[in-house]
Figure (cartoon, rainbow, N blue to C red):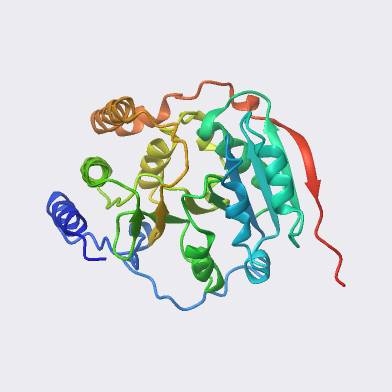
Length: 314
């Protein structure tokens, strides 16, 4: 996409880091292994991948059907199971999700958080579930239909999830598309990408979109349980990824804003982001070592509402 803001953002990011940041979506950042880029060839990986699809959902009744309508049989076969986590919807999202997944040839569990854990808390429930049930990776796809599973499916087929600890969807890198997203918001996001990149000393071209993949091995110590529960969870998580020297790769996504109801209060979110990046810049290790969660580590539990087993072969 010929986007002047994109090119300006890349140039600023390169200048801030003192080198070319390789902010295109083909770059994998792996300083701990000395590999700035990795080939796109399939990786041998483990004998058996067990990918969990995690769909956080809050008042997504109009959108959840569209999310699962894109799950062709070949995409379904990428996953060992799906976990839909409802955070207390009151618009019929649960019923809509049950209907949307009824014909999938994929085991689906639909749960509701014990209390309002917000988006970050829902991630914690999902990561705990993945670790407790032997999944090798968690693919996060928001239930509001702003991201598209088809953007990550080709990467999973090529085994790129085995060559990085995190595959991170980017709304702003080379090849990304934004529909219904204002120029002002794009500029604001690039400004924060720059600030967080400078603080982390690593190129960050999106601070958290609705489509990502995480290997579970780097999550094994459950460091994520002390991160924030609210919408700033992703800010804390990407700083932790950088601090822990995890291998991450950005890939371009298409991001749509149509009939979604945003829970983001832009000014308040911007002020929180400034507080986070400022606190991290002053005391990187001490900042993330402090607890930012609203609940005790053992509080992130959910109640099973519905299960859909894999359909028997005809």
